[in-house]
Image 1 (cartoon, rainbow, N blue to C red):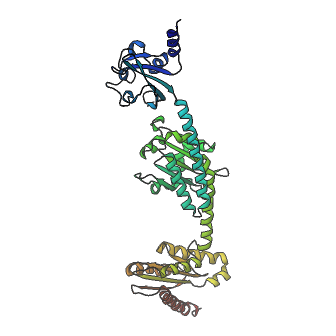
Image 2 (image 1 turned 90 degrees about the horizontal axis):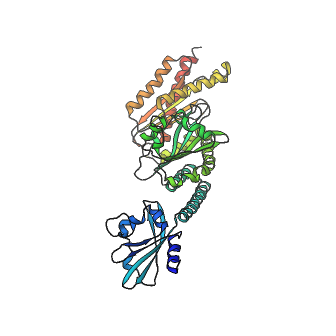
Image 3 (image 1 turned 135 degrees about the vertical axis):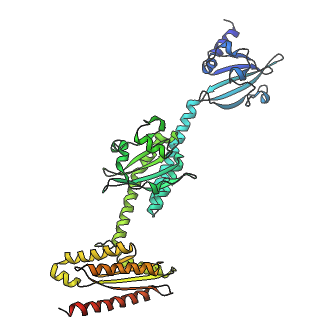
Length: 443
């Protein structure tokens, strides 16, 4: 074997792809075995053919051809991604002059594995940075709702998804409700329409969640088209999905999910890693809500208490209202009922009156004392207010077990709420005086 044959043999069996073309005609004059293996062609299909046709399956010279920029004795390095192969290559081009003939000699190295490894490292670092950002957001934002919404934004944007959301489970009726949501621009919110959904809708996920596994759907087409899961997701234009369970101790309390995420990020487990921190904030929110209930809600009746009443009066001072109506109620004979029939009976009287007020007025019902209630109506017409007042008086006429004194006043004039309450309070005491005169003196 002479020197030329040896060189040819070495290049032909080189691990890199090697080929040469005539720069004037673009004809391939050499291609080693590795190149032929990579493109899946024979020598006969390549040699003597234009390089753009033989190697790129194009009808005209490639837009990225380097012939025009090559210089003698100077290497030109560049990268290319072959979409048909899904491979990355780094190419080293040289201009070789043989007599009056110019050749482009190209040596290519497949760097796909290195690119993917770098991308893997980069993705992992991005996920770690995102996790730290999520934890930092939950740790330093005192407003729980704001913190969770910001976290969903971070998660949704990291996954490049359409929606990121949290569903919370209500064990009392075994339903789940969408309580938090982030949506990408142009994506319609779903939060209001996904309330009190039977948990049985997620039966296909429950076993997976119970084993602390996430539900990952890379493509909706991988599901059985007759399944409920497919129908539900299809209706919401969800083509891919990732959802991770939320556990409080060993109890499944909900899940966090992302709709239509970028598939490349699905296997990094970001949702699983942030789930425990989310649960802490959800529990914190529940505690805050409980403290709010204890501070502002009457424990016996469920209506607003005196603290809430005072706070609401302060708020009304800064607001303009076109009309104002006040109902003042004092239960008659509560002390006598407590003494003769027991406090449980007296409590039931209070609850009955409270329920009546809630059914009649719905909101802004306050229990300001043991047997006293105030209702504040803003922006209601005189006819509406009078109709509700008459409904209360109709209750008194029909009910022989419970009696209360009632003062009612409505105005469309500019007057302070305190003054109008005082008017209603006086009217109530006038009504109570009539009650005592009518019933107590008759005994």
